[in-house]
Image 1 (cartoon, one colour):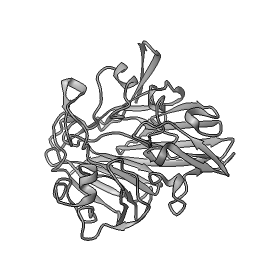
Image 2 (image 1 turned 90 degrees about the vertical axis):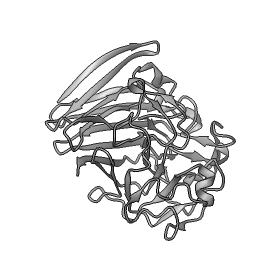
Image 3 (image 1 turned 45 degrees about the vertical axis):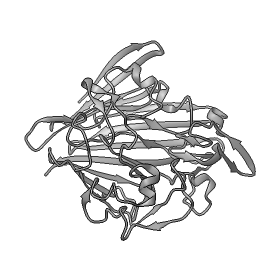
Length: 348
């Protein structure tokens, strides 16, 4: 089922769309930033839990340049070293908003823009948003047309589809920046969530800004090994340089088998029994354990503290545009391109 709600803000009119199914699973997505505001599903006792962090007031999302709760991020998610890159013999300078680096493409991000509601598809329980990003926007080359679709299926799959077309070669690595807490958004720490991550390697970082050094490291024998299920918090406080640099997990994991048929991650809420499975055709995922949440005011008067949510941000690798041996994030001119990420919920 599909419902819409118009909301007036100081920045303009925003449309919130609710998608629901007969399992009582529901989503609320906003045309502000193509942002996921709410994701409700039943726990093992039949109680509804909202499993994503966020704000009550839509106006708070206009200033969402710190946590990025639920945001659609582009053109490039994650970090770009020295806020610059070269493409086709030309150097491009983008904004420095994370020390000397660029994070999530900088100020005036896609998450703070009002997108066009391009299609409401009641038959497929899907909404599609459209954004036109002009040549030179945030310093990136090419006119980019981006569509992002959210679909809620009968069997509790949230399908997020990115469709992009540009008239020049341009970097493109989108993600959704939802923070999940499978015990409910206001339930506290996620350290006792059980995580299985099908990633045998990851990209180590140089410093606290989480720029990869360019190496590919094996997770075997390190706190980064989630190939067999373990709690997020089991090894998070170990004396290990990569954990110390980021204050926990904030690293790109290289997926062993990117696929829309087989999950790259399975997470279980320890109190609710809610299971989240994640699928993608992108090559990496930034697993972030919410290390820098610091009593952020959230929905229903919640205060989101350190490690009260985790992110599974599917993407190309951080700083890939400056690292030739990483998979290329370049969207080729006049070449329609589609990526998809799926989050499926259920209970034990």
